[in-house]
Length: 144
Image 1 (cartoon, rainbow, N blue to C red):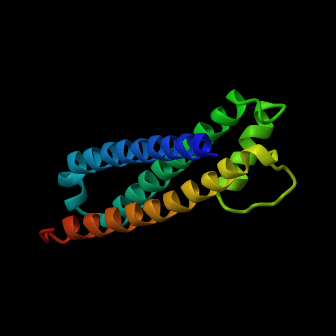
Image 2: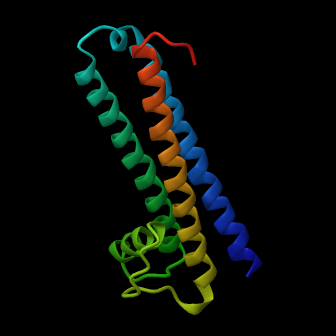
């Protein structure tokens, strides 16, 4: 049990580090784009930024799902890689469909997968909100 909690905590930490790196890359790109963002027409530029943030979010979330799937596959919890990815996605998004379940010995890992996903959805929402707020302030020549 303690082994699963430690492993799940490490995977969650790796997922958060990956998200932080992804967010940093996005922020660096947006900083380089600031002069372009200030010039009209602004609506199309806002669309480009929204696309960048959504795409970054998809990459970050996929990283977390694949990270958990890789651990499940390494532990031979599921028979196929597809099943490991499917379970990780369902648990990460906290859907919990129940058509694929982990053995009783790994139940804590399943719960930690869901907790990691729940945490990441909150973080990604904050990332989207903060990025759009920053872009709007840049476009209106306001200071953060």
